[in-house]
Amino acid sequence: MHIVSNIALISINGTLFFQLISFLIFLFIINRLMFRPLRGVMSERDNHIEKIKQDIIDSENELKNVTNQLQQEESAAKDEAFELQQELEAEASRQAGEIFVFVRDEIETIKEKAQKEIDAQISEARKDIRKESEALAFSIMEKILDRRLVP
Figure 1 (cartoon, rainbow, N blue to C red):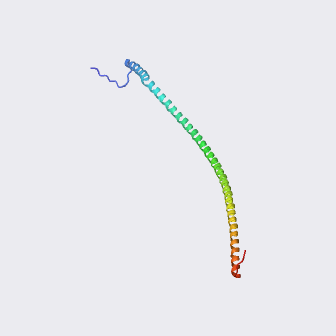
Figure 2 (figure 1 turned 180 degrees about the horizontal axis):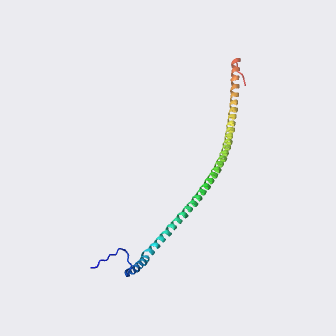
Figure 3 (figure 1 turned 90 degrees about the vertical axis):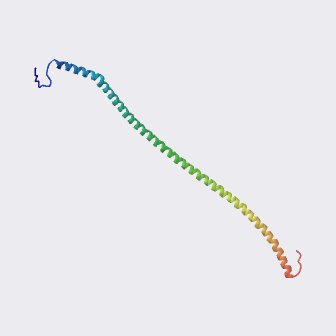
């Protein structure tokens, strides 16, 4: 029986070259089958993530632009509404003034008509009072004189 006492882990002999060639073939195969596709997928993923980041930045910029545009449109709409309100208030004030003038004229007309009616009634009342007072005076004179007077 032969006892081999070898303490070294690697011994240089014919199997070392065979193992080295086997290892290099294994690296070549694993590189072709696993590492290259894995690096390609990782590169695609990194490109996709960069594209998503760029899309996010573009979307944020577009959001800022749309927000600014909406604020400008809102400001313009508020200004237009304020101007329209001012115009409507001015038109309402003008119409109210016209209505007051019309009503004042109408009141004057009604007042003049009522004054004419009152003057006519006073004139009629004076005529009636004059006739009655003449008749009453004539009657009083007849009673005082105790005789009949001819008018």
